[in-house]
Amino acid sequence: MSELVTGEAVALEVRPARLPSRALAVLLDLVVTVTVYMVVSMALLVATASLDEAAQIAVSIASFLLILVGGPIAVETLSHGRSLGKIACGLRVVRDDGGPIRFRHALVRGAIGVVESLMTFGAVASIASLVSARGRRLGDVFAGTLVVRERVPAGQATAVPPPPPWLAGRFSALDLSAVPDGLWLAIRQYLTRMQHLDPQVGWTMAEQLAADLAARTGTPAPREVPPPMYLAAVLQERQAREARRAFGGGSAAAATTGGGGARVAGFGAAPGAPGSAAAAPPAAHQDTPSWGAPSTELPSQHAAPEETSRSERPGTGFVPPA
Image (cartoon, rainbow, N blue to C red; front, side, top):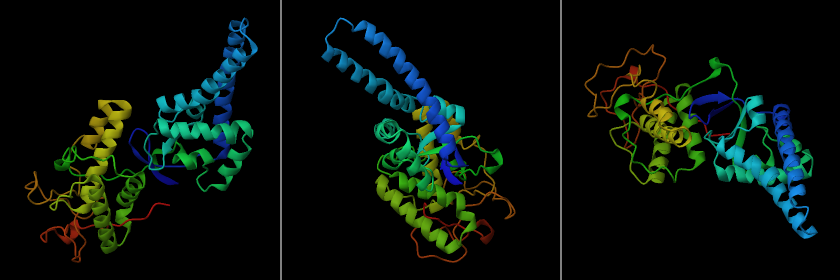
Protein backbone atom coordinates (compact mmCIF):
# COMPACT_ATOMS: atom_id res chain seq x y z
CA MET A 1 0.00 0.00 0.00
CA SER A 2 1.36 3.44 -0.97
CA GLU A 3 0.15 6.86 0.15
CA LEU A 4 -0.57 8.94 -2.94
CA VAL A 5 -2.99 11.52 -4.27
CA THR A 6 -5.07 10.73 -7.34
CA GLY A 7 -5.39 13.01 -10.33
CA GLU A 8 -8.42 14.65 -8.71
CA ALA A 9 -6.11 15.87 -5.92
CA VAL A 10 -7.72 13.57 -3.32
CA ALA A 11 -5.36 12.01 -0.81
CA LEU A 12 -5.76 8.24 -0.77
CA GLU A 13 -3.87 5.16 0.14
CA VAL A 14 -3.72 3.30 -3.15
CA ARG A 15 -2.15 0.08 -4.31
CA PRO A 16 0.42 0.17 -7.11
CA ALA A 17 -0.85 -1.84 -10.08
CA ARG A 18 0.81 -5.21 -10.54
CA LEU A 19 1.75 -7.08 -13.67
CA PRO A 20 -1.50 -9.02 -14.33
CA SER A 21 -3.78 -5.97 -14.25
CA ARG A 22 -1.31 -3.86 -16.19
CA ALA A 23 -0.85 -6.57 -18.81
CA LEU A 24 -4.62 -6.83 -19.28
CA ALA A 25 -4.91 -3.05 -19.66
CA VAL A 26 -2.05 -2.97 -22.18
CA LEU A 27 -3.63 -5.85 -24.13
CA LEU A 28 -6.94 -3.99 -24.38
CA ASP A 29 -5.15 -0.82 -25.48
CA LEU A 30 -3.16 -2.75 -28.09
CA VAL A 31 -6.28 -4.35 -29.53
CA VAL A 32 -7.91 -0.94 -29.97
CA THR A 33 -4.74 0.73 -31.27
CA VAL A 34 -3.85 -2.04 -33.73
CA THR A 35 -7.44 -2.13 -35.02
CA VAL A 36 -7.34 1.61 -35.68
CA TYR A 37 -3.90 1.28 -37.27
CA MET A 38 -5.03 -1.47 -39.64
CA VAL A 39 -8.12 0.47 -40.72
CA VAL A 40 -6.11 3.63 -41.32
CA SER A 41 -3.35 1.70 -43.11
CA MET A 42 -5.82 0.12 -45.51
CA ALA A 43 -7.39 3.51 -46.22
CA LEU A 44 -3.97 5.05 -46.83
CA LEU A 45 -2.94 2.14 -49.05
CA VAL A 46 -5.89 2.80 -51.30
CA ALA A 47 -5.39 6.56 -51.21
CA THR A 48 -1.67 6.38 -52.05
CA ALA A 49 -1.88 3.70 -54.73
CA SER A 50 -0.89 6.21 -57.40
CA LEU A 51 2.24 7.35 -55.53
CA ASP A 52 5.70 5.88 -55.95
CA GLU A 53 7.15 3.32 -53.57
CA ALA A 54 9.20 5.85 -51.54
CA ALA A 55 6.14 7.98 -50.86
CA GLN A 56 4.14 4.96 -49.78
CA ILE A 57 6.89 3.92 -47.35
CA ALA A 58 7.01 7.44 -45.90
CA VAL A 59 3.24 7.46 -45.41
CA SER A 60 3.40 4.03 -43.74
CA ILE A 61 6.10 5.17 -41.30
CA ALA A 62 4.17 8.35 -40.52
CA SER A 63 0.98 6.42 -39.82
CA PHE A 64 2.89 4.00 -37.57
CA LEU A 65 4.39 6.82 -35.52
CA LEU A 66 1.17 8.82 -35.31
CA ILE A 67 -1.13 5.94 -34.36
CA LEU A 68 0.94 3.36 -32.48
CA VAL A 69 3.25 5.87 -30.76
CA GLY A 70 1.52 9.25 -30.79
CA GLY A 71 -1.96 7.86 -30.14
CA PRO A 72 -1.28 6.42 -26.66
CA ILE A 73 0.71 9.53 -25.72
CA ALA A 74 -2.15 11.82 -26.72
CA VAL A 75 -4.75 9.68 -24.93
CA GLU A 76 -2.79 9.56 -21.65
CA THR A 77 -2.11 13.30 -21.79
CA LEU A 78 -5.70 14.33 -22.48
CA SER A 79 -7.22 11.85 -20.03
CA HIS A 80 -4.64 12.51 -17.28
CA GLY A 81 -3.31 8.97 -17.26
CA ARG A 82 -6.38 6.90 -18.13
CA SER A 83 -6.47 4.98 -21.41
CA LEU A 84 -9.34 2.72 -22.41
CA GLY A 85 -7.60 -0.35 -21.02
CA LYS A 86 -6.76 1.39 -17.75
CA ILE A 87 -10.34 2.60 -17.36
CA ALA A 88 -11.60 -0.95 -17.84
CA CYS A 89 -9.13 -2.30 -15.27
CA GLY A 90 -9.51 0.57 -12.80
CA LEU A 91 -5.96 1.89 -13.22
CA ARG A 92 -4.43 5.31 -13.65
CA VAL A 93 -0.96 6.69 -14.37
CA VAL A 94 0.13 9.29 -11.82
CA ARG A 95 3.35 11.06 -10.97
CA ASP A 96 5.58 9.75 -8.20
CA ASP A 97 4.00 12.27 -5.83
CA GLY A 98 0.48 11.24 -6.88
CA GLY A 99 -0.39 14.24 -9.06
CA PRO A 100 -1.79 14.02 -12.60
CA ILE A 101 0.71 13.39 -15.38
CA ARG A 102 1.47 15.90 -18.12
CA PHE A 103 2.64 15.68 -21.71
CA ARG A 104 6.32 15.16 -20.85
CA HIS A 105 5.49 12.18 -18.64
CA ALA A 106 3.31 10.58 -21.32
CA LEU A 107 5.95 11.29 -23.98
CA VAL A 108 8.72 9.51 -22.06
CA ARG A 109 6.46 6.56 -21.21
CA GLY A 110 5.30 6.23 -24.81
CA ALA A 111 8.76 6.56 -26.38
CA ILE A 112 10.34 3.97 -24.09
CA GLY A 113 7.24 1.78 -24.35
CA VAL A 114 7.87 1.33 -28.07
CA VAL A 115 11.15 -0.41 -27.24
CA GLU A 116 10.23 -2.35 -24.11
CA SER A 117 6.69 -3.29 -25.10
CA LEU A 118 6.29 -3.31 -28.90
CA MET A 119 9.75 -4.24 -30.15
CA THR A 120 10.37 -6.88 -27.46
CA PHE A 121 6.74 -8.09 -27.32
CA GLY A 122 6.48 -6.96 -23.69
CA ALA A 123 9.39 -9.07 -22.41
CA VAL A 124 11.47 -6.15 -21.10
CA ALA A 125 8.43 -4.43 -19.60
CA SER A 126 7.34 -7.64 -17.84
CA ILE A 127 10.77 -8.28 -16.36
CA ALA A 128 11.12 -4.68 -15.16
CA SER A 129 7.65 -4.77 -13.61
CA LEU A 130 8.39 -8.00 -11.77
CA VAL A 131 11.70 -6.72 -10.44
CA SER A 132 10.37 -3.32 -9.35
CA ALA A 133 8.98 -3.08 -5.83
CA ARG A 134 6.06 -0.98 -7.11
CA GLY A 135 5.57 -2.78 -10.41
CA ARG A 136 7.07 -0.04 -12.58
CA ARG A 137 8.41 -0.63 -16.06
CA LEU A 138 11.37 1.30 -17.49
CA GLY A 139 9.12 3.96 -18.97
CA ASP A 140 7.70 4.68 -15.51
CA VAL A 141 11.17 4.86 -13.96
CA PHE A 142 12.49 7.38 -16.49
CA ALA A 143 9.27 9.41 -16.58
CA GLY A 144 8.87 9.50 -12.80
CA THR A 145 5.40 7.93 -12.91
CA LEU A 146 3.51 5.09 -11.29
CA VAL A 147 0.47 3.07 -12.34
CA VAL A 148 -1.93 2.75 -9.41
CA ARG A 149 -5.27 1.10 -8.73
CA GLU A 150 -8.12 3.55 -8.34
CA ARG A 151 -10.70 1.03 -7.14
CA VAL A 152 -9.82 0.55 -3.48
CA PRO A 153 -12.19 0.14 -0.53
CA ALA A 154 -13.29 3.46 0.92
CA GLY A 155 -12.40 2.36 4.43
CA GLN A 156 -8.72 2.23 3.53
CA ALA A 157 -8.56 5.91 2.51
CA THR A 158 -6.60 8.30 4.73
CA ALA A 159 -6.88 11.99 3.88
CA VAL A 160 -4.28 14.61 4.64
CA PRO A 161 -5.50 16.72 7.61
CA PRO A 162 -6.77 20.05 6.23
CA PRO A 163 -5.60 23.37 7.69
CA PRO A 164 -8.02 25.56 9.69
CA PRO A 165 -10.41 27.82 7.75
CA TRP A 166 -8.57 31.05 8.61
CA LEU A 167 -5.62 29.89 6.49
CA ALA A 168 -7.75 29.27 3.38
CA GLY A 169 -6.35 31.23 0.45
CA ARG A 170 -3.55 32.81 2.48
CA PHE A 171 -0.84 31.22 0.29
CA SER A 172 -2.58 31.66 -3.05
CA ALA A 173 0.18 34.01 -4.28
CA LEU A 174 3.06 31.59 -3.61
CA ASP A 175 5.16 30.44 -6.56
CA LEU A 176 5.15 26.64 -6.27
CA SER A 177 6.77 25.90 -9.63
CA ALA A 178 10.22 25.30 -8.12
CA VAL A 179 9.07 22.81 -5.48
CA PRO A 180 10.16 19.29 -6.56
CA ASP A 181 7.80 16.33 -6.54
CA GLY A 182 9.92 14.58 -3.92
CA LEU A 183 9.38 17.39 -1.41
CA TRP A 184 5.59 17.30 -1.97
CA LEU A 185 5.64 13.55 -1.34
CA ALA A 186 7.67 14.00 1.85
CA ILE A 187 5.26 16.67 3.12
CA ARG A 188 2.23 14.50 2.36
CA GLN A 189 3.71 11.48 4.11
CA TYR A 190 4.60 13.57 7.14
CA LEU A 191 1.09 15.02 7.46
CA THR A 192 -0.61 11.63 7.19
CA ARG A 193 1.67 9.98 9.76
CA MET A 194 2.44 12.75 12.22
CA GLN A 195 0.15 11.39 14.95
CA HIS A 196 2.09 8.15 15.20
CA LEU A 197 5.60 9.56 15.60
CA ASP A 198 7.72 11.01 18.37
CA PRO A 199 6.65 14.61 19.13
CA GLN A 200 10.11 16.18 19.31
CA VAL A 201 11.47 14.42 16.25
CA GLY A 202 8.27 15.15 14.36
CA TRP A 203 8.35 18.84 15.24
CA THR A 204 11.98 19.09 14.13
CA MET A 205 11.15 17.42 10.84
CA ALA A 206 8.17 19.72 10.35
CA GLU A 207 10.45 22.73 10.81
CA GLN A 208 12.96 21.31 8.33
CA LEU A 209 10.27 20.60 5.75
CA ALA A 210 8.82 24.09 6.25
CA ALA A 211 12.27 25.62 5.79
CA ASP A 212 12.86 23.60 2.62
CA LEU A 213 9.45 24.58 1.26
CA ALA A 214 10.00 28.25 2.07
CA ALA A 215 13.40 28.17 0.36
CA ARG A 216 11.84 26.68 -2.79
CA THR A 217 9.02 29.21 -2.90
CA GLY A 218 11.26 32.18 -2.12
CA THR A 219 8.88 33.42 0.59
CA PRO A 220 9.62 32.95 4.32
CA ALA A 221 7.09 30.94 6.30
CA PRO A 222 4.91 33.08 8.61
CA ARG A 223 6.30 33.02 12.13
CA GLU A 224 2.84 32.95 13.71
CA VAL A 225 1.83 29.78 11.82
CA PRO A 226 3.16 26.48 13.25
CA PRO A 227 5.21 24.48 10.72
CA PRO A 228 2.73 21.55 10.41
CA MET A 229 -0.14 23.96 9.79
CA TYR A 230 1.95 25.86 7.24
CA LEU A 231 2.76 22.63 5.39
CA ALA A 232 -0.89 21.59 5.31
CA ALA A 233 -2.04 25.00 4.03
CA VAL A 234 0.52 25.15 1.23
CA LEU A 235 -0.19 21.53 0.26
CA GLN A 236 -3.90 22.32 0.07
CA GLU A 237 -3.15 25.32 -2.16
CA ARG A 238 -1.10 23.09 -4.44
CA GLN A 239 -3.88 20.52 -4.65
CA ALA A 240 -6.39 23.26 -5.47
CA ARG A 241 -4.18 24.43 -8.34
CA GLU A 242 -3.83 20.89 -9.66
CA ALA A 243 -7.62 20.51 -9.54
CA ARG A 244 -8.15 23.80 -11.38
CA ARG A 245 -5.63 22.80 -14.04
CA ALA A 246 -7.15 19.37 -14.59
CA PHE A 247 -10.86 19.80 -13.97
CA GLY A 248 -11.72 23.50 -13.76
CA GLY A 249 -12.97 25.63 -10.89
CA GLY A 250 -15.50 23.23 -9.35
CA SER A 251 -12.97 20.79 -7.93
CA ALA A 252 -10.70 23.62 -6.89
CA ALA A 253 -13.43 25.20 -4.78
CA ALA A 254 -13.99 21.96 -2.91
CA ALA A 255 -10.27 21.51 -2.35
CA THR A 256 -9.82 25.07 -1.09
CA THR A 257 -12.64 24.92 1.44
CA GLY A 258 -11.38 21.61 2.81
CA GLY A 259 -14.75 19.91 2.68
CA GLY A 260 -17.24 22.68 3.28
CA GLY A 261 -15.14 25.24 5.10
CA ALA A 262 -16.48 24.33 8.57
CA ARG A 263 -14.22 24.56 11.55
CA VAL A 264 -12.21 21.35 11.88
CA ALA A 265 -12.19 19.72 15.29
CA GLY A 266 -8.87 20.10 17.03
CA PHE A 267 -7.61 22.93 14.80
CA GLY A 268 -7.12 26.06 16.87
CA ALA A 269 -6.39 29.37 15.21
CA ALA A 270 -2.92 30.76 15.81
CA PRO A 271 -2.80 33.73 18.21
CA GLY A 272 -3.02 37.01 16.38
CA ALA A 273 -4.51 35.40 13.26
CA PRO A 274 -8.09 35.88 12.04
CA GLY A 275 -10.46 33.79 14.09
CA SER A 276 -8.13 33.50 17.06
CA ALA A 277 -10.91 34.56 19.39
CA ALA A 278 -13.01 31.57 18.43
CA ALA A 279 -13.82 28.82 20.86
CA ALA A 280 -10.96 26.65 22.04
CA PRO A 281 -10.42 23.27 20.35
CA PRO A 282 -12.26 20.27 21.75
CA ALA A 283 -10.74 17.94 24.27
CA ALA A 284 -7.91 15.56 23.44
CA HIS A 285 -10.27 12.70 22.64
CA GLN A 286 -10.99 14.13 19.18
CA ASP A 287 -9.65 12.06 16.31
CA THR A 288 -8.44 15.06 14.28
CA PRO A 289 -5.04 16.35 15.48
CA SER A 290 -4.26 19.93 16.39
CA TRP A 291 -1.19 21.71 15.07
CA GLY A 292 0.46 22.89 18.29
CA ALA A 293 4.09 22.46 19.24
CA PRO A 294 5.26 19.38 21.20
CA SER A 295 5.13 19.50 24.95
CA THR A 296 8.85 20.13 25.39
CA GLU A 297 10.50 23.35 24.25
CA LEU A 298 12.41 23.06 20.99
CA PRO A 299 15.06 25.50 19.66
CA SER A 300 13.13 26.78 16.69
CA GLN A 301 12.16 30.15 15.30
CA HIS A 302 8.74 28.71 14.44
CA ALA A 303 7.91 27.51 17.96
CA ALA A 304 4.25 27.77 18.91
CA PRO A 305 3.16 30.22 21.68
CA GLU A 306 3.62 29.05 25.25
CA GLU A 307 -0.08 29.34 26.12
CA THR A 308 -0.95 26.40 23.85
CA SER A 309 -2.02 23.61 26.18
CA ARG A 310 -0.46 20.17 26.27
CA SER A 311 -3.73 18.55 25.15
CA GLU A 312 -3.53 20.62 21.96
CA ARG A 313 -0.06 19.39 21.11
CA PRO A 314 -0.20 16.16 19.17
CA GLY A 315 2.60 13.89 18.13
CA THR A 316 4.07 15.05 14.85
CA GLY A 317 6.68 13.33 12.74
CA PHE A 318 7.98 12.49 9.32
CA VAL A 319 8.75 9.31 7.48
CA PRO A 320 11.05 9.71 4.45
CA PRO A 321 9.57 8.54 1.14
CA ALA A 322 10.27 4.97 0.13
